[in-house]
Length: 248
Image 1 (tube, rainbow, N blue to C red):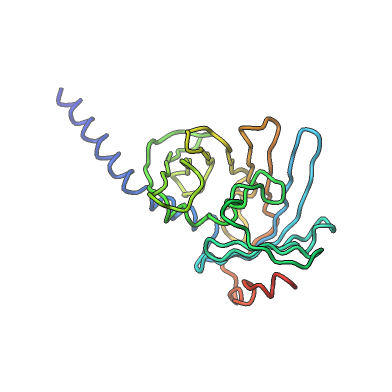
Image 2: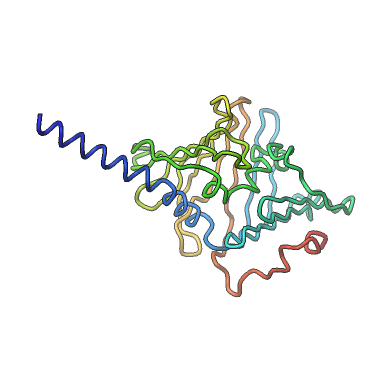
């Protein structure tokens, strides 16, 4: 009886610590993935049952000031299409019509460049820290790694589109392995898997992000990190994050 009681106390104490640490784990995860700032090139492959499309893009990410600039490099017909994020606001520039458009909240769940990533995925990354309550709900094994399972529930009136987000984060280094997106009815909509962990610019990082649409069979998008400069020196100029730069 004494052993069982001690075991119960240990379990309850451990769970309490994990619950309190949920936000801290997510903060560390975001820091590991993005740093304070980075300049990176990516290759995005959109896969459908009957066709495949590849896009190459460059991104300037200033997480410390909640701003991101993205410019498409390839294919030639899309080169120059650009996106600017300032806090929760997103603008798009289409060079063929020489027009800057602000993307309204009603379009946040629309596919980004026809992929399985949405406009919201581009805009709301930092809101995983500020707009959700965090709860460690389990300690599991995934592909031989010990992971925290963390549920993120939206705060009241938070400007988010998901009913719940679930992360599986490696205990040893705070890197994500998997992320689930659920709607307000609890349906699993998308699964993001982080793969191919390697050192780039001196930092261990998942080089491949695979987003699978669970509502449409055979539909997924892969993003591969081609190169990255974490916390670049000199810092990214403020002029990068402007409407004028969208039009260049």
